Image 1 (cartoon, helix red, strand yellow):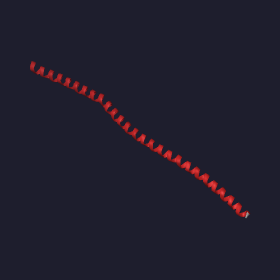
Image 2: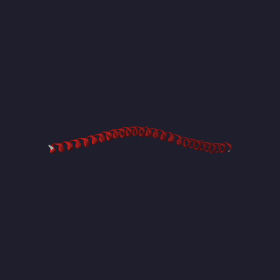
Image 3: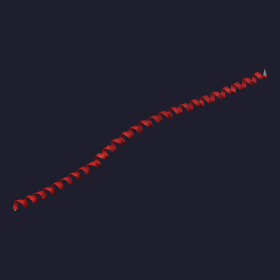
Length: 97
């Protein structure tokens, strides 16, 4: 009888320990789920941020190209003016003779 009582006490202890461990695992599982959800939100935010950065990068390239285009137009106009002046001078010399 005493042996049965000892065995019952051990079983109750094991059940109590198991219940405590299960409760701890449930809490850990809930925390892990929260971390997974937050990680998913962060991943989505990073993805959106990447898209915004790509758009900004494109806009910056376009803005940087604008002064270069203006400078190229200015150079082309200057070359055209110089060429026109040279041609005019040559034609003027030919007509004067």
